[in-house]
Structures are given as C-alpha cells and as structure tokens.
Image (cartoon, rainbow, N blue to C red; front, side, top):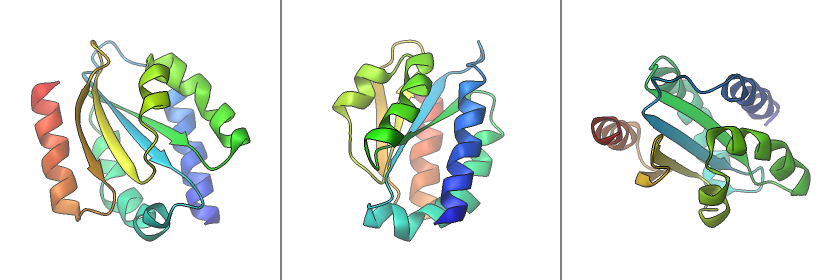
Length: 131
C-alpha cells in the first residue's frame, strides 16, 4: 500500500506540471485505499499500463484519490488544471479508468482496472484513435 501511495504522489506531480498542447486524451484514474478493485489491480496497472501511457505525449494522466476528504482535496488542483473537475465530480467510480477528450472534456470510453491488461490496452488504443 505504501508503494501505491508513493506512486500516486509521483503521478500527481507529473500531472500537476502541466498539460502539453499536444495532449489529445486525458486518462483519469479514480482510486481509493478502501477500493477492493484498486487493491487487487493497482500494482498490476501501475507496472504494465501506466508506463505505456506515461510515455505517450498525446496522453495526460490524472490520478483522483477518492479515499477520504483530505485525498479528494489534494486531487482537486490536478482535476482543475486538466479542466475535468466537473467530469470527475459526476464520475466517481473507484477502480475505473476514464478516457476523456482533452479538447471537449467529454468521455471517450471507460474501463475497469479489474479488466485484464489486453482489454485495458485495447480500450486505451481505441481512445487514442478517437481523441
């Protein structure tokens, strides 16, 4: 769990640094320490999916920690910077990965972190093609 917190802080730092003009898709990851899907699949997601997404200049990753009031407040600046705070307030499913069009701020697709790596990659690639 400590590794997940450290990784989340790292990704939050990356997301807060700014959104490049070339960003086409915002990948919103909703997580929480109490979420069973997150606990079971977070490490696999961080090891196999996050590096792929982080290397793509067309994708901006935003972590939204819904664990408690303090983590929600800490996530808010990132959501605002991305312009997706309204979207995030309406889409609160934990263990979910939402792909949002960076220009229109509308949902392209979503996938549960419980899905296998191939299914998540398939949804990711389809979102990039639409974004």
